Length: 232
Ligand code: SAM
Image (cartoon, rainbow, N blue to C red):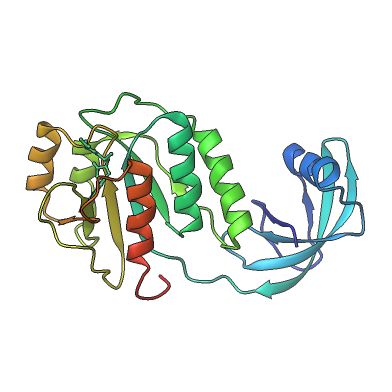
C-alpha cells in the first residue's frame, strides 16, 4: 500500500490536495488512478486510509476515509553528525530516518569541509524514508551548527553518546528515555573538538568496535545498537 506524508489535519471525509510531486509519483510512476486507495499520515493524527478522488497532471485530491493506526509514540533519539559529502549525508538522513531518529542535527567540526546543506532536499529524503519505513513521523532536521553550539545547547537530561574510535571507550549501553548519538567527520574529530567534548557534561564516550568505520557506517551501527534492547 502506498503511504504518503501530508501536512493538513487528517479526519474522516476531509479532502487533501496532492502536491505536484505526489501527483506525478502516483499517476506517472506508480500508475495509480482515481478510486485507488492509499494511506496518509501527517505526524500527528495517526495513519488513515484515503481514496484518490482526482488525479491529473501535477494535481490530485485525496478523500480521507478511516483511521487505521492511532499516532504512536516516537523513538526519542537525536543524531548529531558531522556534515559529510552530499551523497553520504543523504545516506545518513535516509538510514537514520528508517532507524527512527526524532531529530537530525548536522554538525560543523574542525575537519568538516561543508557548512551548508540543502534543507529541502534532506527533508524530501527524510519524508520518503518515513513513507517507506512505515513510521508515522518525519524527523526534525536542524540547520548545521558548530560543534561548540550543539554542545552548549544540548539538553542536560539527554545523554549524548559520542562515538570515539581508537579509544578504550565502552560499548553503547542503551538508556531508557531520551538520548543522542554524536558521529564525527571522515577525518575524525580534531584536537579542538576533543577539547570541547571533554568539557560537555552530558557526554558519554562510546566505542563501536576495534575497526575504524566510515562515518555513515558508524551512524547506522550506533543507532541500531541504541535500539538493540527493545524498540525505542
Ligand atoms: N579519522 C579516523 C581515521 O583516521 O581513520 C576515522 C574517523 S571515522 C571515518 C568517522 C567517525 O566515525 C569518527 O569520528 C567516529 O565518530 C566514528 N567511528 C568510526 N569508527 C569508530 C569506532 N570503532 N568506534 C567509535 N566510533 C567510530
